[in-house]
Image 1: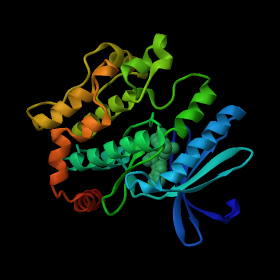
Image 2: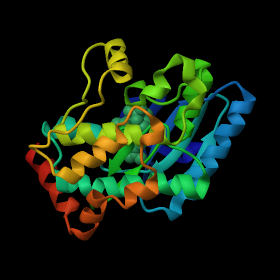
Image 3: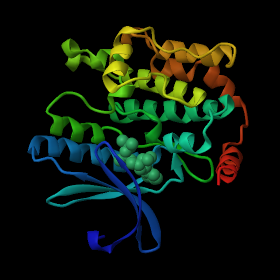
Image 4: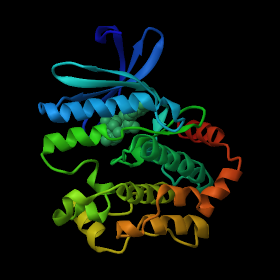
Length: 281
Ligand code: ADP
Ligand code: MG
């Protein structure tokens, strides 16, 4: 395929490292993410490796399919399957929290996607947050934007920081500790994302500086035990621990009673999604 064969349809959104637009190629609709390319050739080769991983990840049903990519002298364009919406927009649209049984199903998909990236490709996501969790019209939940987005930001900012700071674990915000983030930083981001979905809002407030100070110094957020099941409260509590070594790994998460319980349920995410999208029109 050639770049000029992609037909622009409409803008989907802008993010920390590029823009996403809906495009069609022959009769297929795709989401194309355009990111400025880095001038550092070492970084560029790492990005290409990540892109190959993304394109190879079609054997995981919880990861957004990638059809391929284009590299021009100015930018990198990644062609992905086009999903119905992402969770941050969905929250804005519905103006209320997502019910616990839907979050149960969602958690299963996200943890499986992260587990897959770790075991199959030895990579961490680095940017787990509601805008990187997507839903399609049949209620299928998928993760997108791992590795690559982080690398691009990293190479441009000349720092070890990658991803959105508001979802980073306290260890990643500590300037004395920049190099030491590991896979369990994603577990913190997951916990914070679950709190946001369950309550309908991001748990910290204030300026970005205030929020980062709170993430580093305050007790981590917890769910109100009067409103959520003990299993859900417990899952969030173990993910949101300041010491990364105390956080669970993916095998432990997949064995957690909250996950086990929701695997047994036949919650209809598709129906819920159709209803909330219908209601808010
Ligand atoms: P962010 O840092 O907010 O994730 P992105 O550039 O990754 O920014 O994405 C911009 C917007 O496009 C977000 O709202 C995101 O959910 C949406 N988006 C990204 N990929 C897709 C896709 N494959 N299908 C539909 N929407 C997408
Ligand atoms: Mg994104």
